[in-house]
Image (cartoon, rainbow over all chains, first blue to last red; front, side, top):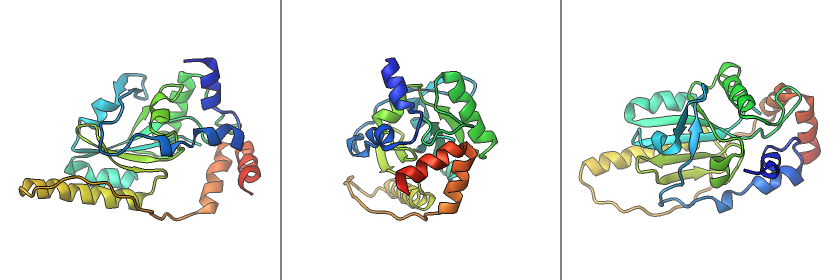
Length: 68
Length: 154
């Protein structure tokens, strides 16, 4: 993890030069093949993973987003 | 989306909200600089905005979010094997519920021993654009968020 990546990903202002590079839905994983797994954290800071989530139910709906 | 989560929980459909970067940082909810701050903002999502689904937080560098296309408010549906079976570049409850109902029917059909093979389909779905509600949300982030959005999109 580099400071540059942290700064670019967590951009400080909503200007096209800063948010447009992250609009990469066309490069996202295809349907039908196993998705990549990542660690995630609960609100109390406990680590879990995306695979722990998707394996818990027949289907899992994952909405990505933020407060803002 | 909260209502859908509740409606289908007993049918074996899990639902989470995965916290990413701040799409429209403002003075009140600024851009993220630490994991502690990210957890605080995610908690506000529950306490202020009323998200009742389980909220999970991505790493500060958004490893998961970036791997899945890093759109600000997308939705993915996974099956139990971890295969994405639905993805949308924007979250819309009607679209998601339509997909959930379809996939639950697939489970029923399999239980009834129908032989099925997956195929890919593309479809353009439609969502309601509520500008007033959107700007109310921006104002909650701070005046800077409103100004920057107006400057970007008029």
